[in-house]
Amino acid sequence: MADHEMMNLEEMGNLKESMVLLQEELINNHRIDPNLYVEYDVKRGLRDSAGKGVLTGLTEISDVTGYNLINGRNIPAHGRLYYQGINVNELVEGLEGRKFGFEETIYLLLFGRLPSKTDMEMFTEVMANFETLSGRFVRDVVMKASNKDIMNAMQRCILTLYTYDSKPEDISAENVLRQCIEMIAKLPLIAVYSYHSYCHFRKDETLFIRNPQKGLSLAENILLMLRPAGNYTELEAKVLDIALILHAEHGGGNNSTFTTHVVTSSGTDTYSSVAASIGSLKGPRHGGANLKVQDMFEDIEANVKNWSDEKEVENYLRKILNREAFDRTGLIYGMGHAVYTLSDPREVILKRFARQLAEEKGMMKEFALYEMVERLAGRLVMEQRKLFKNVCANVDFYSGFVYTMLGIPKELFTPIFAIARIPGWSAHRLEEILNASKIIRPAYKYVGHHMDFIPYDERTAEEGCEEVLENLESTSADSGEIQENLIEEKAQQES
Image (cartoon, rainbow, N blue to C red; front, side, top):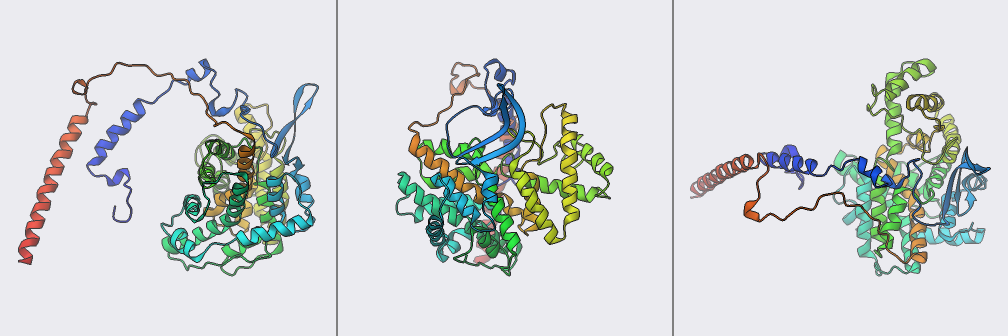
């Protein structure tokens, strides 16, 4: 415990026996019969038997479709994603070479309409003025207690911003809008500065903090602040801008956005709401998926000798599915989606820009491997799982590859997702405040057993507890005697 306050099991010494005993009691007393979920028709994970999400609210912010309704039947179709009714494909194509695409998307999500040129000039000016952190905040908050997990650092910084707000508890829509725009603008700085602090204080690398520049897009400023030389190509900034657009929102039914609605419905402050959503996104089942894809491809590249040999690649993918290779979970990461069937529109768009970036970086060999795995994996997963639903690649399949080509370190993969998603969370928080009036309070069915109270002196100890207690008391007595001897020796030396 010399360098940190929290102990792990291996550092507990004689306390380890006690913790093992407590852990066993926890595990033995909290198992619920899985058949009860069927008996009481509980929608585990808020999904029905077909995997479709249970309807819990209404939204106008975004829509996700993976089917066409024809003659009353859902027919698999190429996926479509809409922001405030606008198809995301049209949103990307409509940029026509202009930057500030992510900023346009933020405006659309928050206000429900596409901004005019005048709107954008005003909005980007507002964003630029909020895109700053004081030197005191960077020194006293961002650089304190640095660690490898930048998502935790972001949560800590967001919660601390509460104390720098003159009206932190004001949850009127007007004040929340101001808070949201400020955090959207500041989160890239918090993420990049937290990463630099980690590299300096934990990896002994040179510390540099570069301020964002007015007139640059959020995507450009992320690359400017992240890179030691601050340089980037026009294509690099464009691809990151597109990646941020594609991750900004996704139908409202995802875990972190639902967290936003749940926490907001309690009436809590904006900083607590955003911190809760970041905590949700941090989970590897949600925001950390692209990391797993990238790790998987590194494993494939290391174990497949000829990347262009389709048979060799297929054989290794079968090993992954059979739990014989990579992390032995039997999963090919980046494949499959709960809603999309024939294609994920975000993946289709990002793949196109990944190809352009791979050409610029001289990484077409790697891109060809991704394409081959994408082509083979869908069929292999369907065969392995005996599925009739098509398995398509999702947005995570290429996003990690894109970030790697952009020189973004793995520690920032999920934080980049959070930077992209905070506009969606903000739009949903405002929608909840403006339209809902009840706290979200789900129901849980009690399936335990009622028991009689047992007086304190009549309760029996857990098996093994008395032996552990005797060992602890014996060790404590020995430690006390040793401590007394040391004090006595020191006193004699001083005299």
